[in-house]
Image (cartoon, rainbow, N blue to C red; front, side, top):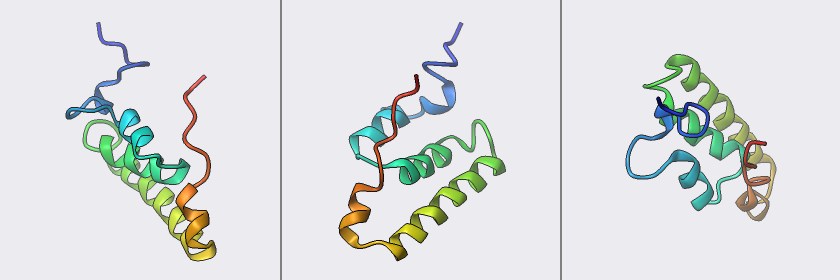
Length: 83
């Protein structure tokens, strides 16, 4: 039986888990969600996940336009681990 909470199939494509990639690259909230939804859209949410990725990308673009380059590098807090 697969563990859909800790190791869902839609995040286990390729050689590295999406969560580990997001943390390794130090993506923040918006960018991390873009990567997450793009990574899983074919196996889970389809168009809904693409629209979610688009929403987070638009949020990141708005912040990019509104903030200085140095403030954007932090991209907000690193995605926290689920509790």
